[in-house]
Amino acid sequence: MHLQVCEWKDPEELRVLMDLELGDHGESHQQLLQRVRDIARYSVKTNHPRFFNQLFAGVDYHSLTGRFLTEALNTSQYTYEVAPVFVLMEDVVLRKLRSLVGWSEGDGIFCPGGSVSNMYAMNVARYWAFPQVKTQGLWTVPRLAVFTSQESHYSMKKSAAFLGIGTENVYHVKVDESGRMIPEDLEAKIVHAKSQGAVPFFVNATAGTTVQGAFDPLDRIADISERNGIWMHVDAAWGGSVVFSKKHKHLIAGMERANSCTWNPHKMLMAGLQCSVFLMRDTTNLLMHCHCANATYLFQQDKFYDMSLDTGDKSIQCGRKVDCLKLWLMWKAIGAQGLANRVDIAFASTRYFVEELKKREGFQVVSEPQFVNVCFWFIPPSLRGKENSPDYQEKLAKVAPVIKERMVKKGSMMVGYQPLDGRVNFFRMVILSPQLNHSDLDFFLDEVERLGNDL
Image (cartoon, rainbow, N blue to C red):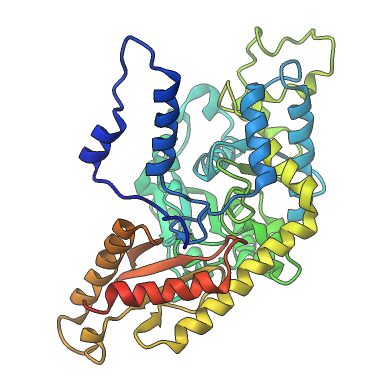
């Protein structure tokens, strides 16, 4: 039998169990060892094959070795002086990722997560359109408009808030039933924003939406962005990794036409948290111009080596964690072909899961999956055939939260649920770990039935 995915404790109980308070005196070696065991015991095992809760899962041991080494070496990725190996390594990894997108030249940086990568995109795009914003501030810039799909990541609103653009100036473009942006509505929203006196400067297309795993039509969006002179960014945090697969790369056709993209190898490629890149097609050193502050104590101009290797001023951080080693070591170990296999296996497991799900009574897909997200309802026997009764939706909405609570308290597995656009709570199954086999997927369906049949 598998170890549990989690050993659930209520917060009050866990606080006491863990004895988290900090004191004046140190503890014995034995006590500390017990603490380490307890931390592991009561944490969620995200590398468990039945953890389906997030857009990351599983463990790659080469990447894990890279993470151990990063922590042991404890350096900051800002100058060649203090991180010689990693400055060169980051450059190689970013260049390789850009070439996969289709850019022979360009720029980029590792960021602490996809939300920050998206924020970099919005900030650089604004600087590109209105460079005076860096020195003179917001009052020199007109009201700006951002466009993104209804089902895009919430980091678009967070970025607009953080950068002083304002969440009300984020225009949400309609999506089709599968969650893809509708280009005609993008055009209409751009016209609408202009009529309100706003200046459209940033379009965000999503490659792999958070819930449905939808891929926006990038070529159509690129046409509209080019026509209007707007910076086009692709949030491919989730879906970017399909670029490795010959079979599935078509999902991001047109990405090479964007100005920038976000891509998280810590998701589908299993590089481990955190591993997120912001990539640009720009060759004018826009990233450096936008962010640099030229600190003379760190970025001295009279050093004895090539100053262009000190890339730290491209970042809004000073201290910056080394995030390239875990990806580099894993890539060295299994090659681009191994990473491609990882993507293809996830798609194959998803196809198997959907076929099995459709054979069972009470399971209903929300929309046909485009990616490895499978969104579905479980309809307990008591609700079957009652679709037309007035309280059906209200009752169905309560099913997923109860099943979720039961599975977490039992510790058997973890999977997320949510409502979306007038659709009541449904499960979002994410199938990405290569450690998964068919028996885990069968177990999942059996377990949902076991936990929900009496509802």
